[in-house]
Amino acid sequence: MIEARNRDSEFFALPEAMEGIRPSATPPEFLEHLHQALVRHAEDDLTDDVAMLLVDRLDGEPEPPAGGADVGQRSL
Image 1 (spheres, one colour):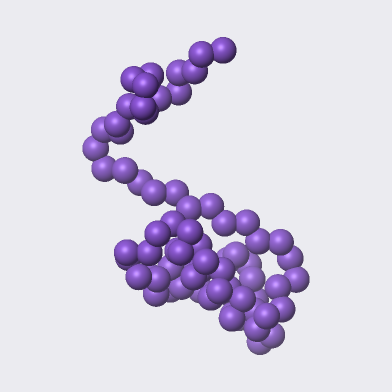
Image 2 (cartoon, rainbow, N blue to C red; image 1 turned 90 degrees about the vertical axis):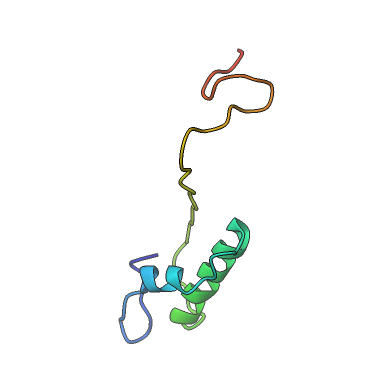
C-alpha cells in the first residue's frame, strides 16, 4: 500500500490514513475504511493487487483459548 501512487505520482500516506479512522471501528470496518482511502488516493485506478492484514497488540498476558489448551499447542 505504501507504494501506491496517484496520477500525480504522490505516494499513499498510510499513517495519515490510519489516523483518520475512528478508534471504535471494528477490524473489518478499519480495513474497509483504509481500502476506500486507498481507492480514493488512486482515483479508482488500482493497477496492482492489495493485501491488508490488521494485527492488534494485546496488553498483558493472553487468555488461554477455550478448552484450556496452551497457545500454540495442538493435538495431532
